[in-house]
Image 1 (cartoon, rainbow, N blue to C red):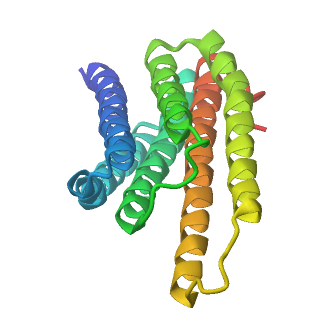
Image 2 (tube, rainbow, N blue to C red):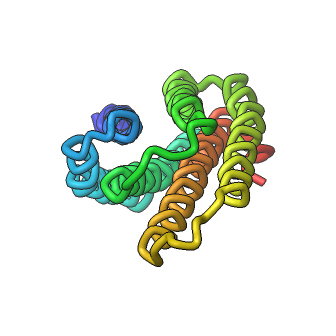
Length: 226
């Protein structure tokens, strides 16, 4: 009976990790939709929902600690718990990045940089995160390599977007009668867009981290971690 209970605890932990990922991915999607639609209510919902993500993280953190301390797992079970602990940390940080996107939406003043397809970048990050969690659930080591490879595409998109923003700023002609407030607003919009690109790039990095920990969990392979 104790052994059955232990296996049930492991299964429940995995299910809770997957549930946390669903909450975080929903928040990320909502943040991207809020940005696209300039929906302040949706952006506020993302920000206010951060407490739920943090609570889930703390509960799962304690579950992992209890399993490590009380069950003293070895081999595959130890890798499962350790990897899950790392994965929930990445998920919590993605939740923080979704909050950042919500705050960028609330602070935005103008429609700028139409050449930057921020939504395509956002869609790719969501797909990478979804696929990373699917690999964790299915213990799919091959998918982990694919996710890591797709991060190169994301990095290229983010670099191109940042270059476009900087180029547009350089090419912007400021009138002599532009007020200091107008110039400051322009600089804030530029900074906000660069931060948005950076935050989405970091979401991709966390997806790769999840894939790396999954590969370690399944194959005891540290290749993608370093």
